[in-house]
Length: 345
Length: 116
Image (cartoon, rainbow over all chains, first blue to last red; front, top):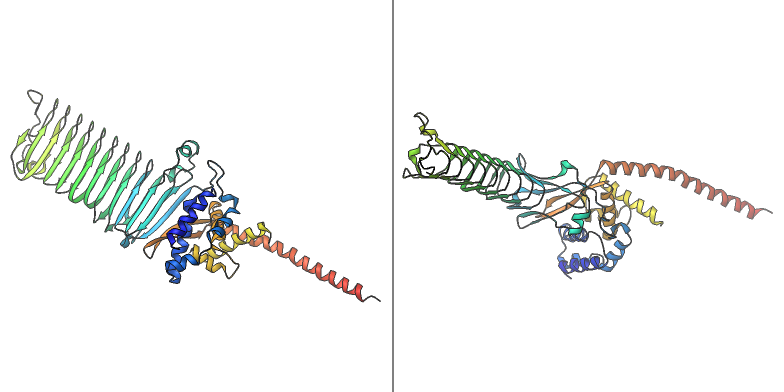
């Protein structure tokens, strides 16, 4: 019998026996099988043959009433923080799927990846490490559990923290919702995809091959970030603030909020909002840029359209002003923001 | 063996092994053999029980390209182990007393038997 068959049959029997936390038990017996192969050099068939018969396992577990499912909330679980530790050089992809939970990525002087996540009766995660892909996924509980089981997690436990080496040859795909998502002090060789909702998204001193950042109804704050190919950051109903960003293509978008930029290094910048101003300072001179800009009911320091140098700048808003200066023009008087005679530029 | 007694012994056995250092499921089963027979399916509920009681913690660490689950004794677990040792000291006195009583009874019976 193969390992998959053994575990599948065991799972079926445990489920039929109304056993609590079947997945945890299966993970335990899978560990035992893999350890037999790793520690004793057994092949898969021999390892399975050395395991207890499934009937005996089920009978043994049946003797422990604490393992029996007796109703909603009957699975005893001490709320707390669990840790996962993996060698960074074997991880090429980090995949996190969460919800209603803060998510923090912190670059540190270390060679491993340490993930700390909370766990309680309502908050559970599945993690895997396979073929270089490290995955942490929040489990979906039955809706009845979500309604009736009180969440016993302490406030300070409500976050997932990934401590990673400052220089990491991997890409990240991070998603949560209704909670803040931040990355600090890390250089990734691959792409960063980070998304949350109804909360702030912040990156500080982060580099990657490319970045796709998205939140909604929350501030998006970028400080000292760089992307080799493209940086795209989107939010809505909130401000978008950038203090130092470098990328060949920069695309910053929000709505009903201001865009405030400082020290951008890029040859292709798109700044789009509505009902909020666009302001800040760009590198180079205005003459370096081919500009497309437009606002309504507001002042605009840029020409609506100009064919300048090889760089491209697009700045659009409505019901607010566009006040962008160029560091290279600072010695001269900056173009004065002027009201449009007809209200449009 | 009385189930409660056996349960207490297996808990103490696992905690004692972990007090030597963090370990994982299969190693615990192997190492326990020097103290008492412990099968895979006997160990699982013990680990769950101790974890739920806060006597041990669980973490995962990469090993040979996969995540292996390790168990670590907590300060609460060490206190439980120390409490277990104290209880057994008291039990040891009762045990010694019982053996002494058995010995005296045997002597008494032998003397009765050799009475003329």
